[in-house]
Image (cartoon, rainbow, N blue to C red; front, side, top):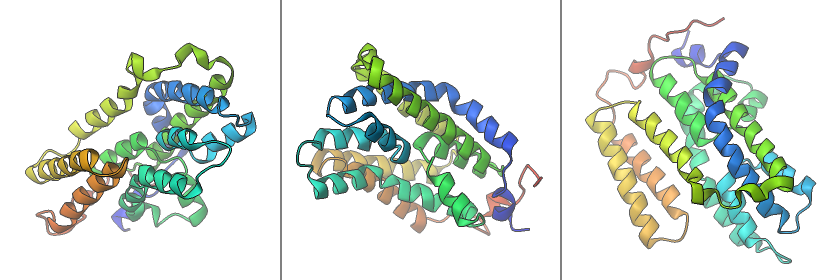
Length: 249
């Protein structure tokens, strides 16, 4: 069986494991959901509208950006462009997961991507590169984050004044520190180091000199382009995945 096809399988036990692994981080995400619920309620949006936004968009930064533009007359095109710029990294997440997702039926494939976030994507990719099955971890971790985000949003509609400014107590650094820890636990070779340095440098330059939020797209594309040009020194691009550590159920 094709290696990617074998790794595309996942079970309820693996989903539960992913849920438990990301649940501690998800509590901090819930604090941001609380702040969002409070801020959204102050814009005049109804509770139903706020709940649907969090459930279907599930992208904290872009949701806060949308609130900044919200008013009696919503600037549609700037809103679309800003949201796309902030969330463009999800296109790259989907591309990196496609070798495994393509073996799933469309409904399950897109259902999984609904719960995509930086944290569960990073955890899944780290496991994939170790030769392990990880779609269950991806789904379970995403469910944990989504559930706490929704819970936080609901609480914020009523009790959000308890944490009006999560940045002031350092909650904005939690996800960044988690992703840094995942990065340090991943591959450690000269190719990976150079790619991260180029992506980081290009992102910082874009942050300083280009329009707001463009640094997300510039950093991702520059690192991805370098990675596609500088191929791995191996007989096959999937050589690191030739022996999955888990068998299909």
